Length: 112
Image (cartoon, rainbow, N blue to C red):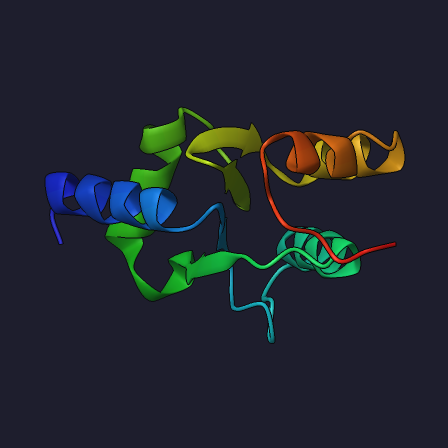
């Protein structure tokens, strides 16, 4: 896959999913601790999300870094907007900011 095709594929996934996680591995089998941490937080909040295993396609793995202008994976998008990686998601969660942010964006959450 070339860079343009990767960019189009990334944009399509971001547009098709209210919450989209580009990660190493899958939600069932994360292949890095940072990806696992973000999956745990999303699962805890009861968020339905799409995911893409960047290890399966190097063009996507590089392309998502360029797409967001963010150097690390995982990367979380909400309603088409890049939110951040593991540190940002963890910090938002720990400060109690992630649930209201998702609710504000109209993302369905499990009731607490």
